[in-house]
Length: 420
Image (cartoon, rainbow, N blue to C red; front, side):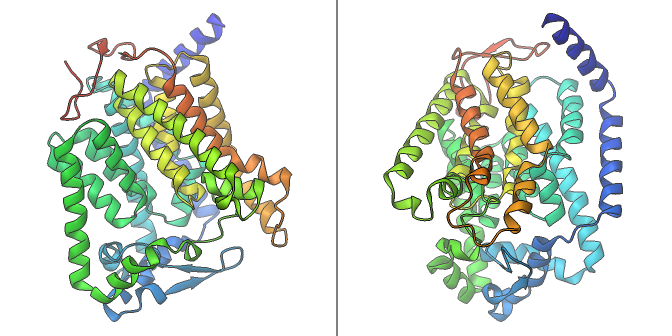
């Protein structure tokens, strides 16, 4: 075991010294695969096509028609998102695809750098090199690749949240980052729990204020569409897609496939919800006591994905910060952390969910859902719970990674920084 660990350290050092070349090679390979096996970014086409309808009153009537199991893709985001997407309609489709994917790859680098900065605020060059390596590897994880293929906005919003929390010194910037991201797509709003858990009251107020301000701006621009969205469409999950599909990796999706479509009214649902919430709270408390900023953020984001009625597999780009914590965090030497990291890597690199989706698409409406597909279809929920358990274990003090100045930091200060 010691020999394997020593060889791993040597290989890690060798890769770290060549981090820039690794990222360049990974991006080049991604570009080649995108050219040789092009994918149609359907979600991006929805953003671009729907945005102009914000002003004509047909934003939520617009839809892109595709093939089953989701034959219709309507616009499902708040009106403010359409306002931001409007410039896309003035560019050629090829230009939009090129720019969107380039910005998304850059956003992945912001996510990895920001996650490592939250973990080790003073690591200096080590953060840069590790961020480059993680971005190079992250391009081949299923949620990231799926986001790029579909033209989804997940990486951009993740970069706003992680970058804002890690790099902004003032409460205004940190709060506005969370508030603006949540105004484009509701799921990042769970980042507000991070601000509350770390007692960043001013930043939390800025998050709420900025979110309300841009929502009011969109309301002034398109009052009719704003009324339609906020008075009913915001809770209409039927417009998003089928809860039962294996593409949906939320807790409700996993249990629906295992137990049936009426799972939300069963006692087993409430029991599972309570157990997952207990695991998340334990992880949150452990991270708070240890001053573990990245652990806190990973916990709230994974919990948000589990609790959403629908969390498509491409929403799970938060696997990247989770894997960074498991590889470099305070409990990285614990067996559970190592096992969880391996499970995340196997599931995401092997693209298990798309493979299961391909099998599912060949079936008639699966009621009851086939058990051989249902059980492996719980993979992201299982990985999230394992991550909670890994975060909850061990000592309450944070031991910085080797080579990081400042060996022990015990709590999170109200401004979001760790004590010197």
